[in-house]
Image (cartoon, rainbow, N blue to C red; front, side, top):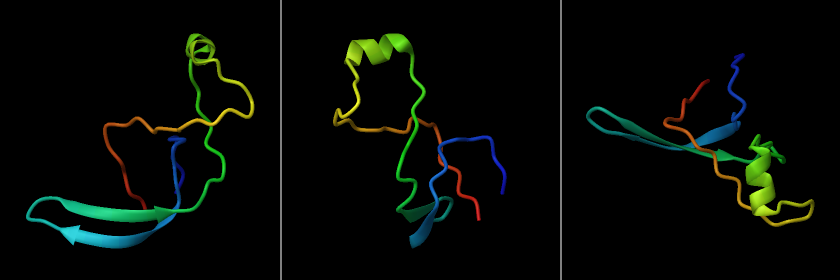
Length: 68
């Protein structure tokens, strides 16, 4: 499946909980080994980011789409 979204994490479904309207799907991911974040120069400078820093990568999204 070809998508333009860059925040694609391949994984395996580990749990499916079906409700009356919604379903909760748990997906275990092991790849990618590297996540690339595109942020503003101002943010990088404000955070003082440098190679070797320990950081947390957060994926900001209003929804998660599952493809198979």
